[in-house]
Amino acid sequence: MNEHYRRWMEFEDLDPALKSELASLTDEEEILDRFDGHLTFGTAGLRGKIGAGTNRMNRYTIRRATEGFARYLLKCADNPRRKGIAIAYDSRRFSRTFAEEAAGVLANHGIPVRLFREMRPIPVLSFAVRHLKAAGGIMITASHNPPEYNGYKVYGPDGGQIPPRTSRLILEEILRVRDELSIPAMPLEDGLSSGLIHLLGTELDQAYHRHLRGISLHPGTGKRIGDSLRIVFTPLHGTGSGPVRRALSEWGFSRVFTVAEQEVPDPDFPTVSTPNPEEAQAFRLALERAQEVDADLAVATDPDADRLGLAVKQPSGRWSLLTGNQVGALLLHYILSQRKAKEDLPENGVVIQSIVTSDFGRSIAASYGVATVETLTGFKYIGEKIGEYERSGTHEFLFGYEESCGYLIGAFVRDKDAVQAAALTCEMAAFHRLEGRSLWEVLEELYRVHGHYRESVLPVTLNGNEGRKTVALILDRLRHAPPQQIGDIGVAEIKDYARGIDGLPPAEVIKCLLADGSWVAVRPSGTEPKMKWYLNAVDRDPATADEKLEGMKNFISRWMDALR
Image (tube, rainbow, N blue to C red; front, side, top):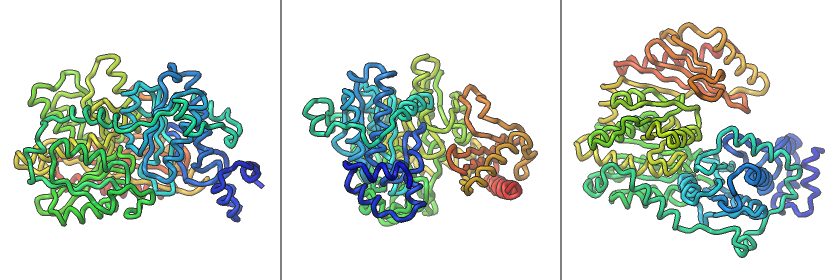
């Protein structure tokens, strides 16, 4: 019998629901999976299936992670017993319970906690850490994973996700915790009466929305557009409903139609297979609603409201779900063009994007004389870069984004912010409508000027040890015997980020730069036999750009098959 399983079953004070769940298990493989080590604490914190076991998300794994975080804070942070920690949570199952468990462990160490009374999105948690000058933050969320998952993300005092060096120090403390079942946590009532736990209401929301209004480039555009711009919005059963609807109302947009079936928070996400606004299936109901009300655009936020999806109507009446690269390019063009028109574009302005984000935005930025800086994948690195520039004064941050639908305009938040992105996207649509153009027409014009960029992400999932060997072989071949061309395009350069190039920390990413400005990148999972291929093609002719992308897809598929 697995020792962890036996220990849990023999623990007298085990949560009754978890004990009952364990008692019902008969499959040895299932028991082994649940107790095969502990959930790994990485740069994104914890994420896993909800349930009983050391390898599942439950109150005891939350206590273990928080015990390690508390010990790290007391050793390494600046006065955590004075500054405290902010905690928020999303609409997922047990999110509130897990948030209270984390608060109780911190309070037991004498670290004060500001716990949101109700669910809040990631950007509000990030803002709260900064606004309250807290020592850090915790967000209970699994982003857009399926409903059986939950997660635990840790934020630093800058309001950004912790960098790898901090996560390693926290992990060291977590690994010193021998028994997750015996970690003391102060009950919520005791924490409230002692003053160690304070419940946050709407005061942080007021402050957040005051800052949010500051990113508007044309205040009052929503009122000027009146009834002639129709917007459909869905929070996909998550935390975005209140903040986004409030923002659009305060920015003057009167014709905002919600998707009733998805407006109310629901941890089961019953109307979608996964609540991911990057995917067409998540937009099915929003586009049905858009047809009903003759809308011009539809926006969606994921459950923790850090990612934004956007669908726009073409002049033909056909709807298109835009990619993160396309939305990022539109927002960037709007920001730079309007700041230039106002003579408010700084000479030292900078755009920050990840290494797997399209060069479309880079071309737009260059046309305004604005530098683009790349970071590793993960918005934590963009947040880190913003802080670095603030301290040095060498650059002024203008916009940050990733291809995976994450955007940031105002640096009062240090993570992806779908509330900011939704508000500015709607203002952008209204501004261009007043000019007589739709967002689709603006995008087409940008393609004519900068070239037609096409992209695709190819996720590859392999199996077991053989799959891991195949992933390793693919990386080895790219490093030591790379293809001379991909599709019909010659390979000009291989960039191996594992070497720590371009001033970035080492990362397991390989990028093949092609002779025509197109590129292909591959990024393996650090824990599973999985990888993602990022394909980016460009050409002055749209049909040729499409053909290049198809050629790249076919080549990658055949090349991998030959290695298996």
